[in-house]
Length: 236
Image (tube, rainbow, N blue to C red):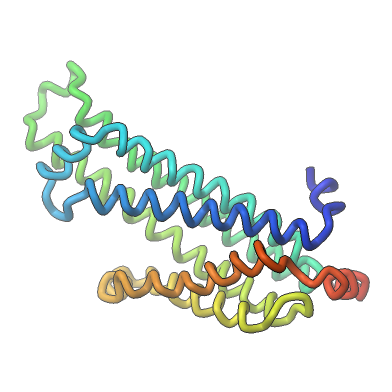
């Protein structure tokens, strides 16, 4: 698979990564809209009622999250190959941060699904009161948010490194690198959750840097000749 990826033209590789990046944004945006609709901060009863009343939508939100992380794994592999000629070690380090972020995000999906088990009405749960079950469900959702937001920290480091690699490359505009650095700094605010909360939802605006890169890859790809020249120079 890796050999086939390496034999793919850099421009096609860039456009494929743009497709996966866009899919990740669309599925992630849908999952976020579902969470905003169903989860009521600090209100266990209202959240449980919403989840049970819209169980299919809740499942779709979880599925969208999983698909989004899978798409980001694909982006990670493609970006490693794209930026390997710039600096192999930094490209590998970036891939490491991204894959750790995807792993943390995938674990968060398990906590997101847990409320359905707690609220499912199984016989063995009858020893708990409705209020206790609702509180447990909300606790799982808080753990989900903790892990999910924690994944942004790793994606922050990833975006910083990709921004630097773009800046040092000869086959992409440097302004795209600056946008990715800004996106990385925005995601790193999740290192201190109170800061990220105080900046929400404005911190999401830094995603414009990632969106700009995505559309550039879809429309223009990369300068194939310059990519080949940099690869031939043996910098990666």
